[in-house]
Length: 210
Image (cartoon, rainbow, N blue to C red; front, side, top):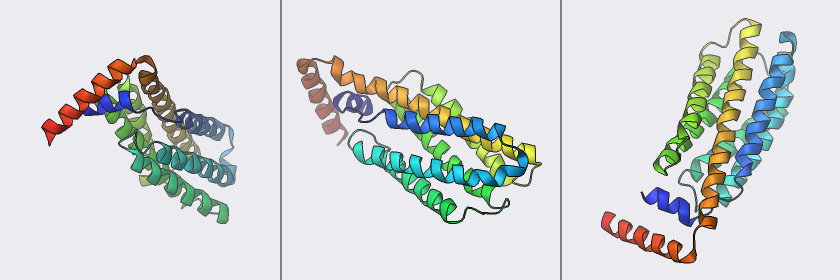
């Protein structure tokens, strides 16, 4: 209940950032499907760019919303992780086929767990379609886990797992963005009097909890 009132009294800033990152991941996933198996290693440059961009966006989003989102710290960790991986792939573009699936897999796996956590936070805040975020996140987790635990697939399986991992992680991020947009609209629809009442109720609940 406290989380729901918090979503009313604090406006989520830059809700579109997860949307941009999600679209980036979906486009990258679709592109991977079109790349021949023999050139899988050439994707390292695309991975590095996507992780650098998403890392910068996630870090900015987390810092901008540290008062609005309970899980902002994890978003910051995710942003830093993506930045580190992006820099690593930029410095070592010729990373071996044996290592690249682990790097991509662990990075997307962490992001999928982050999205799953956001889904449950949305559930506690009363967002009705939080389940769609959870399903997309779980699929991303499963595919990333397969990519990590079974990196020595046939070339086709490796490409498919990588592509689908990015796509489902991207879908979860897009869904999160639209849900955050709905939360952002709550304060705009409330009158000053109603906002004041909500703040009073929230203060009473917090006192009772203490």
